[in-house]
Amino acid sequence: MRYAFISDIHGNAVALDAVLNDIKRKSIDRIVVLGDICFRGPEPKRALELVKSNSADVIRGNADEWMVRGIRENEVPLTAFDTMKREREWGVSRLSQEDITYLTELPASLTFIANEKTAIHVFHATPDSLFNPVPPDGSGDLIKQQFHFESTPEQILVYAHIHQAYIRYIDGKTVINTGSVGIPFDGRRSPPTALLKSVKKRSAHRLSVSVMILKK
Image (cartoon, rainbow, N blue to C red; front, side, top):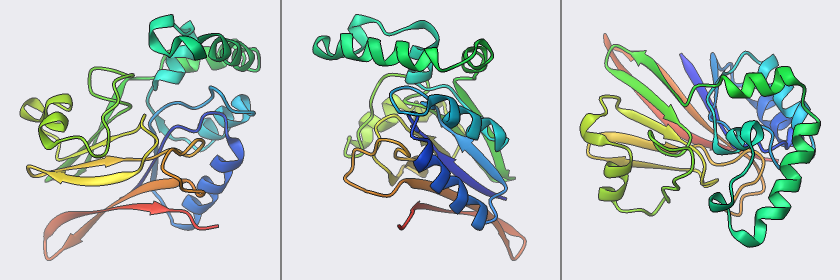
């Protein structure tokens, strides 16, 4: 089983096209989208249609939450509130009621059984929040606390939200951030995809993990 994890498209359908075309060339079995599909970019409707047409497993991000119920003042810097409110209103005007219902019904997290020894838990920011940022250079203790290592049985945790792709190995768990398809914050000009492949070797299963950066 080959998984592709992508996130934070933010209405950038051109970048999403590039990612999906590359995914098709890699014979991926399952596409998982970790939220933030429409808000802020020039093509919210087409971005959502691309996600839906590829039979992806999708969870909700904070920007999807905003598209559904609006932005609250305490959720963004005050200086950006009016601009982001107008951006949200413009994006919603491009969507149908069916689209809004789709975003409303997205789950906050999903778990996948990669093989008999490995499970993957995906969420947008943290298991309890769509908004709390966990940086790539955060301490191991911070990550263990925010991601509830003590009560989380899954071996691989995949999240998004911070727009910076990375992999870390902490206390026997693999923590992956997908980066952002539409608005990367790490200086990359090409959108990242996290690829996970479950392989069988001498009757034992293992999971190989990589973050793949598309090359232009």
